[in-house]
Image (cartoon, rainbow, N blue to C red; front, side, top):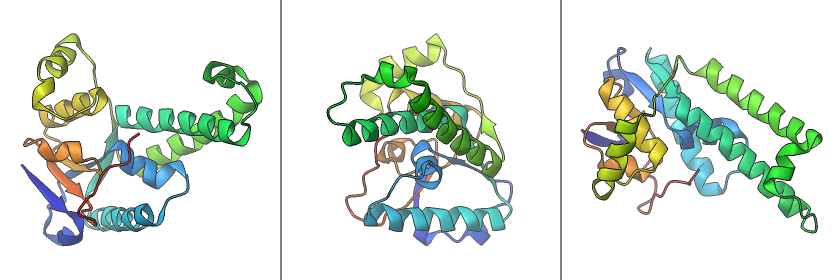
Length: 195
């Protein structure tokens, strides 16, 4: 379909019936609560304003359960990385980190808060199915797309269910002709932060 720079979109011209899906990187920017560099802060502000304008226009802002899972996994990985950085002499493995009740409790509280915030802010959190047929499509078409497995699964689900508007900072979606990609093209080298 098309790629739109959110800075140039007149939201008032978008039908209120259009559903917009927030990708994992947008959810992470808005809800995970980790420090942002100056570049990301500017982009997050632009995404936040665009989403606010869509809500004011009456549009449905939703996401995928798979994207939420990516954010929750990102939180755990980030918390473990921060723990290792703050305790460089501690040989705690990721599995041990998960089994430490105090540390697990902290991560559980953060994931619970982020999950609740996402669910309260999004109109729907759509389920997706992972089937052998979809996995076959991912593997067999690997040379023809730039997706990681989760993004491939969700993109196919979005297209199959006519939810074609996605707000993302992930360049991989720009190649998918089935979707309308809304992104912030603030810099010529715009690259998505990997989750």
